[in-house]
Length: 548
Ligand code: GLN
Image (cartoon, rainbow, N blue to C red; front, side, top):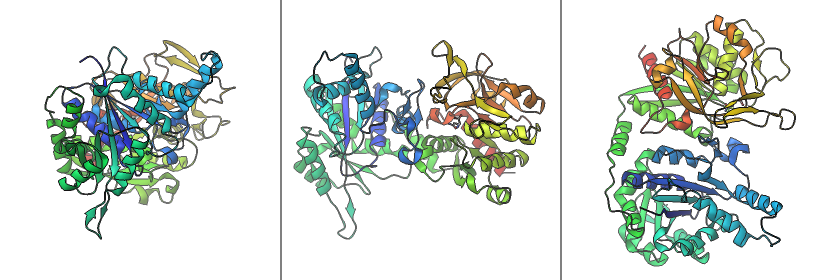
């Protein structure tokens, strides 16, 4: 196929309808039909990226190989279509305006008046086309517009996608609208009015949807689908149900049963090939019939916020499926873990995980948690801040560095076993990068994929089954090499290092049943079809622990 075709996905009635999951699932179905697919998210907010937003506001910041800090929906995209996302897969109003304003300052507009139409809309269109006009252009690009139709801030995006049908032609653009069809229990029926209003709103902006996807508790009847088709002026076979499911990986199967990918293929004149969904069916089947169960404690700061650790929970879910086990997650607020409470809170867990995080709050509770896991032989997995806490704990309680800490918590302390590195080798840039601690107060983070060599025979090398890996980072602080020898002599193993040996990426305690801390975020690369090896082996160790 020559030219990329576009499916634009908008949402109506209310937010959180699962547009991201719908896009990801349609992507999975098209990929299962043998097509190449990518997905892009356009977010209407003014932040240039979600990197600076609090997890309570925006949920997890998903990091790509090229070091972009993106919307968590990109995590769904990678998990469902198993294609790496990049900076190009996520734009915000902020990033679009930022680049227009930079061009204006440079004088690129040659004295013209810079306006939302055409300058902002053109910038949006070129952002969309940037994923298509490439040597590796996919057959289909799904473009998800964040927010809800009717919001002021999404207007330029809707205008841009409206124009694209004129620019590219009808057979290259398709509009799919996701809407809510509530079920009124008292009346015992579905209600279509919100859908009608939302489509009316979309049409008033010049976009006539081709497909309507109805988010619903129970499937919408054929009769009602015909009614929606009539009122919203779409083909009678272009209205689909997207029912609530227990396991998100069932969504592609449900949408396939509805015939969504078939209709998309017909409307866009895509090759008529049946989707091979055997891997998805097997996955859902295994997930629904676990043979074991395991209890994992997650000790962190935002544990109550499901969205803040989205990829982490998914990675644990994938690892459970890989071990044919259900994974019961116990969320523990680290601020509640004290020397008095630690035993009673953590008792009975088969495995303990301390995830990533920022700031001082709750850190002592995390360090106590590591001590508990180490001393009681409970399989332990520390990720990013979790690894840093493990280093601090080992330094204090085993290597006799009583006041060991991180520069993040105590900038003036003597024994900063975790500290702010001022320069390191950036393999993507092919040179050393320097941090300007004066001007940006250490604002730059080490972001994106970095290579790491694994020590043969270590837990990590056994898990990955190879010696060179690449994992994604998002942190400022690093292990301080001044303490490497002392900790090594005290029994801590540095089993994962950057190729130049300077950056500590993984630490382990070999005598422990399974004790691994990693500076990177492995959860970003776990997919249901390729569960992450570290998570898989962590759950395996926890299962062995549960069987005593
Ligand atoms: N706050 C720590 C750092 O910046 C860890 C970050 C993280 O866990 N993602 O290094």
